[in-house]
Length: 608
Image (cartoon, rainbow, N blue to C red):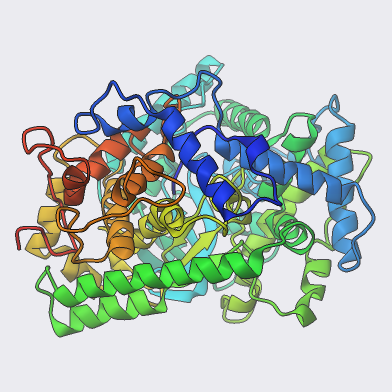
């Protein structure tokens, strides 16, 4: 997923009534104002493109989110909705409680204050019902690795929580033991096991799974199908927690719950409440925004689909070149995956107008109270977990694609595009469809160099070392493993690690996404040395390829906040451009100034 900061925005210059020329002139004005011409683009392109960044720091994700929040505030404080009145009333009550009771104590639900004797398995399940996950292990209802339409329970070792600082001596000791356990088994590539609950009980008797799932699901678990990794970790975890004192484990859970509430609870501002609701009540908030705020869906979707199809067409040409020397069967596997890939605008089910009652009824079981945010908060978290696990109790536990939407455990909504391997789908959140990220009035070079890169980045996740394992239907396949083992595939992985990286798959997506967007706009046979450019009417100094690089780079301008699972922004820009052989030609760099590394994985290498 992309985490980015883009250049300064000239808000007053970009009103809705302005035409395409104004949009493009303003974009170039922003690009030129951020340049630091004292820096050579060949030595440090990020510093050249972003070095004159304004001291008045503007985070354009924050800017887009503020616009979204202000529009949703206007809707939720009005009475103009004509459909889904029950849904609207539920969201309005939640919003009223959020902004109206900033000093309210976050009292726990009664079942979390039960006077029963403490037992860690039951207590963990109760906290999981209210959103706390990943304390001792990660649990979620998701699809099976070998059947992307069949729901299973997924169990795995949690990632380390670097934000947790135990307060009591006994919890510090337990945290140390848990960390040692994670480190011991964290470096192993886990093997997935698909077991019935009865086999899980037999293989990992150190944990009372019947107790856990009965508490979580609030019914007899029956013939539950469980997909588990890190089996030995779970055995040692059960032994560790059995040997630990109840006081230490209970205190540890209490501390983690307090940390979770602190992260998930919004402050009392109207905008914060909207963003919080977008995370915990995603279906309702997406529907309201799409129905009553978003006005350019038809044209935006037409342009996005056209751009996405063009990117897929270019990638298909990469596959036809067959640089990896794949078999016919392996190429068919990749072509089917590419052809079946879907583009989705907004995190909403694929419903028709006749199905809008689904939205009206979705939160019917919740009891949000306009007079108590604590009650509404816990109700929302409990409802989210219940909806996530609901398919497990249905016959066959089959995913219903018509009603599918992403309903995960995030405390902050996904506002940047993302790719789901199991669905073979690229989703662009509605919040992202705003200036400066996107505007259908922009010249194609701006759309291709920014949105083209973003879509290309996400598309490329389907073909990096992890994504290659999933077939067109979202199932893990042996063909993907065999492709990953090809010598040239491995050589590209090794090449991309010529310098340290926080995430190899994200670097590969940057490399391949930028190359794909460039080739799609300019053509595979493009050569800037032989192509005579005429300046665009909105720019007389920079030629088309240079504008492409600059607009891409300025998506990453900013103060370089700490990146999560990505390289720092300057590293991302410089490494991606370093890998693009046309860059040195486009900016007339000499060979010793800019020695392209050329880590091609799918595209024909420049020397081939």
